[in-house]
Image (tube, rainbow, N blue to C red; front, side, top):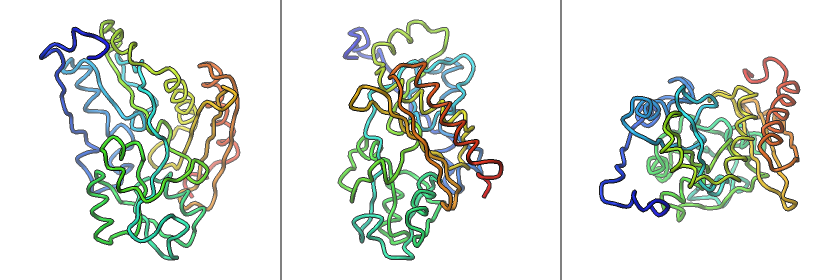
Length: 286
């Protein structure tokens, strides 16, 4: 609305809230219901059918393959990519007594927690919205949980954060903190609106991370983390990680290169290929 006065007129924009399968089915792990497209499928269908004109996604939820007839030309400026540690009894993961239970449905978080703190245990069917997870924490079902700082900021719920984990302690999910906006590939008008909102630095970082994920063929059953950012020299620094679900094996790599789309896509792909060859067959099923 602030970029396009005609959209500020009353009734020019209608917001349609769409509940997806991933929002509705909370009793099972995501991988058991069918993996990644669970938070996007219904929204994509509404877009393709013409019920909506643009679709707003958390990029973390968007599969590496976009549906036919859609494009995703726009990423908004990225929010804080880090994970928050939340506990009523401890100030950090290191501060939790042995045997404490951490609630997280994310295999990426679970494997990195167990790798560093093998004395902790992880309750991994810990799903639901932020409010549900915080309630289960306060009921003592778990002693701590990790949530994306970005989500807590957008919900104005950062007062719940006990401490924030550094990137070194917990490498984020691919595209964490980034919002993407899609439209139909033949809709030039919407593409023009979205072009005015696109934040190119974020779009390139997300493209780099997603090239890494696509090379690894990442699914919800696979602990993968990846983060691209601009370093102090203005270049792209990419860091990638894969782990066995139990955290016993963690493989990491990094790349530095020009902050430009071809270079960054190649860095992501190259890092993914390196970790695939180092992991070897059977690594992800352990």
